[in-house]
Image (cartoon, rainbow, N blue to C red; front, side):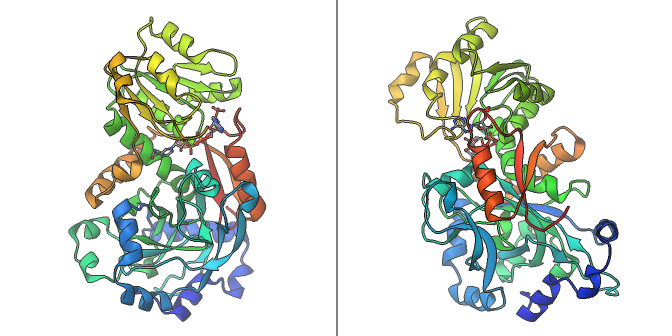
Length: 438
Ligand SMILES: NC(=O)c1ccc[n+]([C@@H]2O[C@H](COP(=O)([O-])OP(=O)(O)OC[C@H]3O[C@@H](n4cnc5c(N)ncnc54)[C@H](OP(=O)(O)O)[C@@H]3O)[C@@H](O)[C@H]2O)c1
């Protein structure tokens, strides 16, 4: 049931008496309460179909539901596409809501334990920053209307579960084990590429349930916000775009980036020899600690020559290329016969079209996938969500957080500037601290 606005306001406000509790005490109280109330960190990724559904179905119910939700939220949003100065923290209308959605509170939440209302605490929440945020900001990926909240990934607390009876009776939904909002599950959410960016770098977000995943208790909200989008990408791309096998030689561009460090660890775990590229020696050292056997510093070395040297002239079995425009054609030289090129992203700009005939030079396979289409169905989402959090929980995947940025206009601009600086300001993941102090 969607909570009434008064209940929601009550749930989300910090009582004056609780502000007088020392922060350290509130934090430890929070940890104890998390353990006691079986809070779960969950992850969400909105598939293209779900994205469409969320904006078109059950308009009447959605309007009814929306009446109970906040009218506006503080968010990192843009009024037009452009350079980093279009980013602003501002009040914007609450995003479209559907009765099949889960509402997430991303900002600080007061968790009221219904059992005795003994004490309350602040729940810190985070927003993961991804390269795709910069594509939307710049206009490389289309935006339907403004203002547009950015952000594909955040951790927070469930304040409302779906009300749609079809969802409530769905077996997959039941398997997720979501509890009523009073039990305060926490979650991370990632809306989809590129149909309808439902931004979650905001105090509240309304997101479809189907890609919200419980994760183990030993995974923090910070890790959850940092790991979901890139983690699901790494897991699906190494399993489905090209299934990495023992003995394979794998090339990963921007290996010290958020996605790169995860791919390197998983490729190594799968038994491959991992070659990575990056811009500086400092980044190369971190990549080696995360599974890279060889790191090519592309500012000093020729990547094609070095890959061929490392592979006795044969080339790699698979290349994962997140740089795009600047590196794409080199992949045909450094991939071996019958190898696979996976075009992962566009950090340097979108790749120009090529003729299929170019693939006959070595009988190459070429893919340009998006993670959204690998976790399209609820079953796929659950499978990969469990797999990702299993890796994190068991220590196979370590999440390297570069920096936490404040949830402010300046914080957003700094994060986007740092992430898109070629030659490398960042190592690993960038995260907004949306909910306040850690
Ligand atoms: N298809 C999908 O579903 C999917 C999902 C997630 C991510 N991706 C893609 O994966 C790539 C990595 O994403 P991420 O979020 O993990 O970012 P990231 O790798 O952490 O991005 C930052 C790094 O990219 C490099 N870089 C920055 N600006 C560049 C530029 N103009 N030209 C070339 N390199 C530049 C720098 O690394 P160096 O110092 O090493 O150059 C920088 O440290 C992106 O292309 C992203 O779009 C795709």
